[in-house]
Length: 257
Length: 301
Ligand SMILES: Nc1ncnc2c1ncn2[C@@H]1O[C@H](COP(=O)(O)OP(=O)(O)OP(=O)(O)O)[C@@H](O)[C@H]1O
Ligand SMILES: [Mg+2]
Image (cartoon, each protein chain N blue to C red):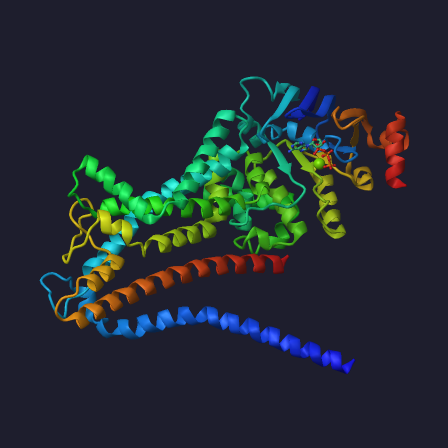
């Protein structure tokens, strides 16, 4: 599923966080959003599933198309949009009152969709396998999701998002709270997910962006009041080897130091 | 050097000793209350006490069944009235009013908080007087009922439960709510299936705290539920006595055999004390279980 972002502006009250971003994100690929802290990466990401507007006073203008349908057309229902797009957060956040299996099925339960017993079992196995977690937890599906290690918890959250079979997966620094081994496991997983999903990942770790991303978008702000704009967007090799903009070059050089 | 070190240990010892003394001093009244109630209350803690009312009794004998039933009925109905209002208000304040930009809703939330603060501050006798006035104006000055008492107690209970409930709900991590919303759940569903289950142990202890706050209330019940020597299972009409009012009436209106009245008063006090301690124990247990759960989870991480 292609994501077409056109002239997107996002605000927190009077503060503009994203300024006039236009960007076409390819389907079945991993796109990394990079840029300095506070340049609006998370905000832009949260505009792709209409999560931005849950913050009081938040505002969005512009167009985000998933395969031609505009998520922001007046009759679009934000709740329905979020069900179609998966999201993984910086800190693993499994529901503490639910077991591993219940966490995977949480989307259905929270949306009030009923699954038969076999459907539930299949969904749990499928989603956990897709998140590379099945073999580690298949004997303790009924134990609490919060009893897993941090990295396992994050993969459980990925499974929870994948269970609803979204075409798009949004990830906001999914590895920044994890140890290197768990990070490796998730990067490996990204390589598999991109075969069938459009993945957008925010990361501060440029080596990670280099390893996992097909496309890279670099954002920056000129001043805090202006909001982040898109500086440059291209394939990973082009962005890291021959960036066209000097700002991109400086950011990458500074980061790799 | 040695000299100074010695002085330090002496100062240390004196200080520690002082602290221990303070601690002991604080427990003494509690132990003495429990001990006195236990020793004087156990005399009449017989089967009759739990199976008979005071109907037709003027000397020894009789029991407090009517008061125990009254306490259970009045406390239960006060809880049934107060809890939906208190938790509903707490939910509205934390989940809706806290994340609005509408000035009207913000103003309303401020007003509601103000009303809760005032309610928390009013003396219980005033809540009783208020109910008394309401009843006198609507049903006539002579009307007494357990239900009127329950409403007065609910007025006292609402701010207690609302405040601690609000605190508990505010502690539910925002990340969990976001995770729920990001899965495409409507907000009411996130509240019902994520926020409330996560907050449940805290809400239960808020509830128990509220009950233990009202179960010993005497003044408002004296005014609107009155006292009686007979059984009354009907909340909606007729005088209904509760344990604290029973203690008071036994103490106040002693018959010829004063000793029998004293003994009954102490026994009722003992039953009440046991009930309150049980509630506190339960609340503590709920909190401990929750903490243990968290520790297990952290340890596994
Ligand atoms: N809830 C909020 N309310 C008000 N302003 C916010 C809020 N969240 C973010 N902002 C502001 O919006 C701007 C963009 O924030 P955003 O979180 O999108 O940046 P980011 O690129 O994700 O940064 P980081 O790399 O640190 O996560 C920043 O100036 C930030 O201070
Ligand atoms: Mg961010």
